[in-house]
Length: 147
Image 1 (tube, helix red, strand yellow):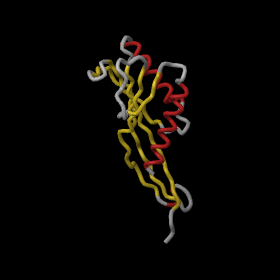
Image 2: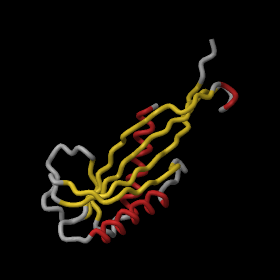
Image 3: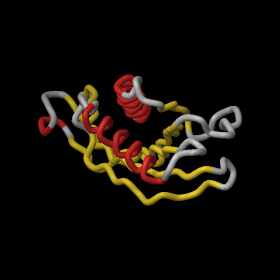
Image 4: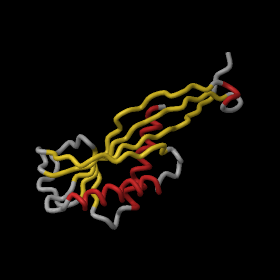
């Protein structure tokens, strides 16, 4: 079931990336196999699935005939790094555009909450960043085996 959640998150991020294709955003995983670009020349968005937990269990007819399912909650952190020569206000605006794109591209209606945090500085990359935490909720069902 967790792999279905990962696939759903991947599809959401793919839609967000496509909707921001005209902007200067580059998407990558939170822990890339290679070093991050330095100096940063575009907005870099790292995606990290930080938590998946079972929120509730449904059995039998509560979900559907001969089905059982679980309600899962997931948390995804989108960290937006600013280009080297940009201002803090530009990063605030870029991360707000990202949050709006996540809300707009949520075709599954899984997004429960989007929180934007304050600006921080990353000494390794030598630029500022801002985190957007997205809380998602998925109801996943499967066939129930009668015994």
